[in-house]
Length: 251
Image (tube, rainbow, N blue to C red):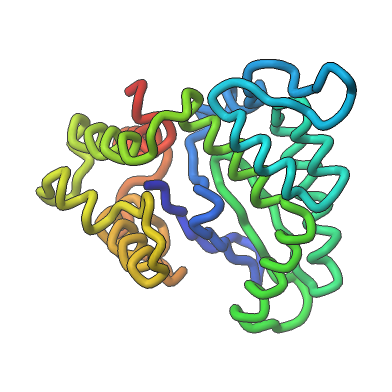
């Protein structure tokens, strides 16, 4: 499971909001070189007769589903060639920000930071901010495009998500990153969110994961400064922890 490092930004009134949908997305800078090359499915994503695109490769189904549900020409044009680049993620986030701007909100997204949303004007409640963000995500599909990009970056062969979660645990164990002893099965039952459809259980497991690995998080699950924060992304353990989350198959 990937959770977010919900650090407070230097700018007054800014905060990082990390949602499960973003998969968010806190990856190390050492992996940006891979990300910058763009993520792609096999084939060019175009039909022979110039009609609806056809997709192939490990993420063909995901591209097809996302393309068919995409609400804008911009989102469809990004997806139709079966490839997503970092520049295209930025382009669709520009559209997302155009939607957010009237409410005094702005967002940024990067493969190493996930999504950061800040309120630079006004005083909206957290609940209202999330309502506006959800509406603008629905209108632009920025979250869906960036999520697909990030997922392909982490799991290019699209292996079974439960298998990937177990590999992530095994990577933690291999590099002695577990803060306290926990078996693989206990980890999967109490902290993994793969295939969970019950919202309360999903959030409970997500919170437990964040709190269990709190020494790698600069903020608590609720966004407050974390007094137990020990390993940032520049430390050896911090780098390895996020590398295990980013690419557990190749550590």
